[in-house]
Image (tube, rainbow, N blue to C red; front, side, top):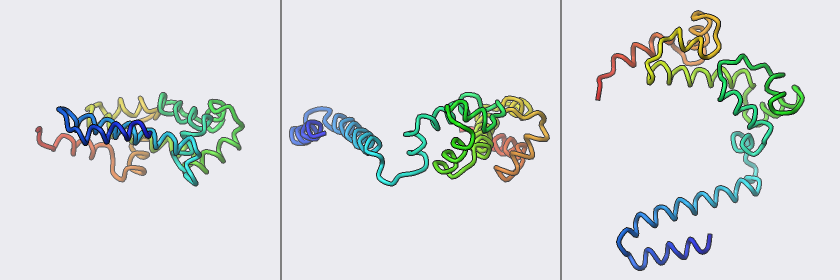
Length: 164
């Protein structure tokens, strides 16, 4: 980091053409190196998503859910992805994320549903099937339970907003 800080000092002292852009990019690199060092050093007492990212077993399971959110992942399936037992996986997942794998998957699906419905203008039935729900009714119940309103209300809100 010291050579980068020295380069930043030289740029700010000479103020040559483009120095502000160079300073900004060097600052980005310095920040990234600081975060990397913090993560590699164990992140102090950090928990949550930093812990998930540092745990290759948990991160494999999270990655699998994100790659295929329409699969009805069981704890056994996710534990297999993680290369660990069901009980160890479930305990680690809950400890690291504060959520069960099933709850995390449901919330992930609803975040994706919001994107698909409001930003990509996909039909609600298509979204329900894409995200692994066997019926529109099951999807609508889950959506309302997690998001707070039915998916149709999201569609109406997206269509009522004026075009920019």
